Length: 218
Image (tube, rainbow, N blue to C red; front, side, top):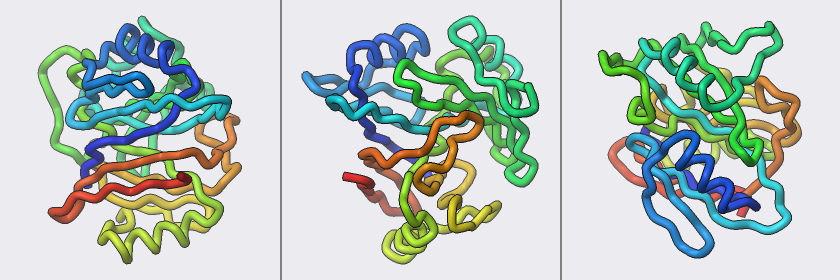
């Protein structure tokens, strides 16, 4: 499954534009009076102006799996990486055969660079913003995430993630290229103490040969 675009909200459109353009260096996609879009590899990341909502999201970017060390050094020159419960900046996900690092944007959204070792995406090029391949995950918050996931499977032919898990509080749909990570309201966003809250999220994705647009918490 490929995540083509996510649209999320921010109370701070101008500072968000500055962070993604100047700190991360994302190319501009388009902008208007109340939105701005950036290109994140093969995906588009769109922020929509909100007022007094203080939205907080979690989303991740796939990077070449042989460039994690370079990505860490690149990141350290731009922002502070989050330290996990093991006092490490790198989290290894054995079941997913992946490693990741986390950081905040200007909105306290929890962002992630993830190296998935089962994807054939190695490169000889030095790590830079062009190394960010796509949006690989977007967190979707629901009171009953497993019920919502089963509904999406039935209506949109999106598979449960084969590497799991599949629980009442956390499950994922898709594959290593793109995941909808479904979590329960007030579950902590790993590796932070931020509680997951329901906020408007729109996802455009391609799965099984068809393109779908899904809107959550509208």
